[in-house]
Picture (tube, rainbow, N blue to C red):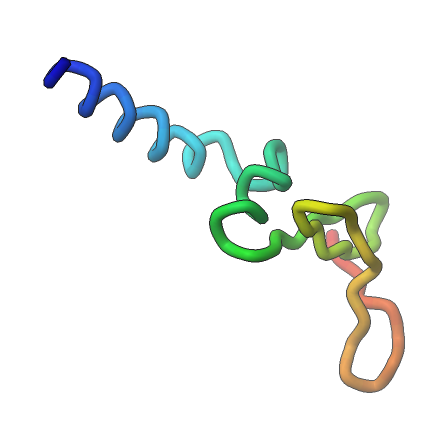
Length: 64
């Protein structure tokens, strides 16, 4: 069973090579939240849902 440990490490680090945007719920599970850009609007993805991200001045956060 020692051979499974390197596989787990590779799978875990492949998450970062794929990008958190494609599996944002998985990232939110480990890091608490993830930021996602959809049609120029930035969202915060949580494990149970998502919300629009707001700037400190109350405007909606945008992205490219």
